[in-house]
Image (cartoon, rainbow, N blue to C red; front, side, top):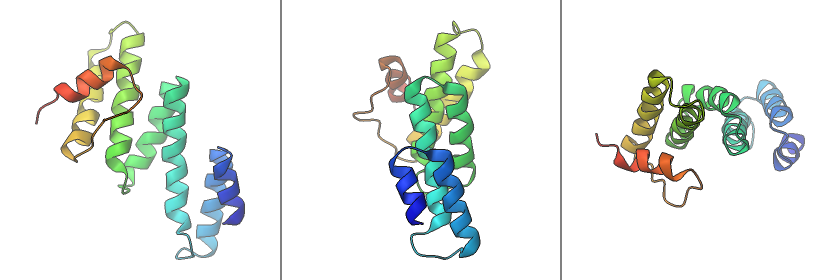
Amino acid sequence: MAQAEKLSQTSAYDEARVAFTNAANIKPDGPGNPRTQALLMELEEGIDQFYSGDYVSSVHNLEGYARDGAEREPLAHFYLGASKLARFFITGSEDSSLQQDALNDLKVAKQAGYKANGQDVSPKILKAFNDLSF
């Protein structure tokens, strides 16, 4: 766990995830909840990839996190929607199914009570999020 925590602080997400998973395999109910920590590395890496402009990888990691129904699922869905919408915008708005998929993720986040206040994302993405109704 100590090694995994050190790796997570240096943004070595893959290595930290492996270390947390190894700790969970040794003692699943161990201190520090290693299984949850491994999932958090997936979320953090997905958000980091979003801000790095690697939207495809971001979607991959965020979908993995959201699929497990973790406690920060609304946050994951917000960034999933933001990643997909950013891809939609940079590809010239060609794929309307990507836009719809993005709006569905943003809607899931909004329905769960997620607030996008202060998020450092494109104003177009924030507008799409704020304009959603359910």
